[in-house]
Amino acid sequence: MKKLIIFNLLFVSTLFASCNTSSNHYWIDNPTDAPITVYIDDTVYDIPAMTKIDIDLEYGKHQLKYNGQELTFHNGGRTNKGQAIINPTQSTYVFMAHKFINQNDERATDKFVEWALKTQSDSLRLKINDTITTLFVPFKATNQLFLSKSDYNWDYNIEEPMPEGITLSNPIVTRQNRSLLNDPNYQAGKFQETLFKLYREQEFKDFIKQYSNEKIEFLLEKTPYAELPKRKIALTKLKDITDAEYQQKLEGQVKLFDQWLDLNGSQSTEGFKEVLLSQELNTIKADFLKKYPKNYSFNQATNEFNTQKQPFMQYQLNIIDDKQ
Image (cartoon, rainbow, N blue to C red; front, side, top):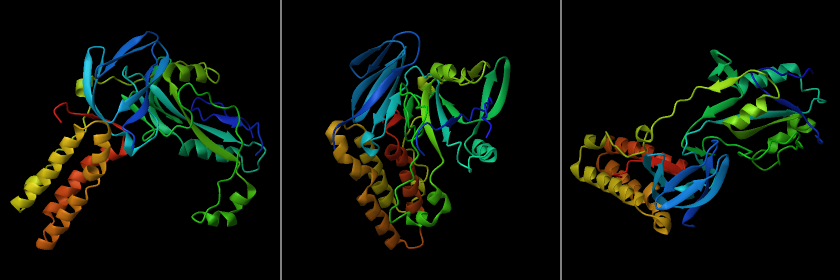
């Protein structure tokens, strides 16, 4: 199989091996070429150039300040113990798919590689040399303030080098996937695998120099802290509830949520289940439907409430309104 080296950058590698705490741990990264100072609440973090530091961040509400900007964010990390990086400089990072293929396997054809290129690529607008163009590439670029494995499920973090080769092994057969035992591909053994890595922008550019002399620039704009979207509870369907008593009951649930955002440490942990997975709200909802079997106004309002709470369950770090 001929080796594909194209700017679309599906890098194919030959295998060299046989076929309730009260805080969470995070990184603050400075990928720039100058030192920076970041403030979280009353703590000052002086971070040298091209360095990430480890921090333990208490659950609950925090103030982040950098370079004359500030915002309020909430750490609900107990909902997701995965890694997360705080990116105060809003620098660009690249999340890339690396495909490893055993070139000695008869299934490792050019046709398969071309198919994999299409299925694992995304459209991205780039500046290449002096030309702005859109390409399908096996990587994504982001300058989000918070980079979470909830969004980018990397196998290798920044500062973790990609291996030159990996050992391929079939997935373990369990009761849930035992049908694999009759799958011809499973029986033949794994011949390819995709692993994902997160790069700082300059590290990514240094990496692709091995494959291309093209000068690549990402076209991401930085949004001022004050204009970044905020997670908040803003119910538009509350007023549609036909029974004033139940309007007040849902308002009470929203108030409990706002109070939870102000809690810190173990108190926040203790209130998590009650607020985000509220059995009381489910009981109120059931009572309303029992009282008004054909009236779905309360149901629609609670669905809106649950949807707006969802990011606080899914993501560790959320930007919120400083008045919440």
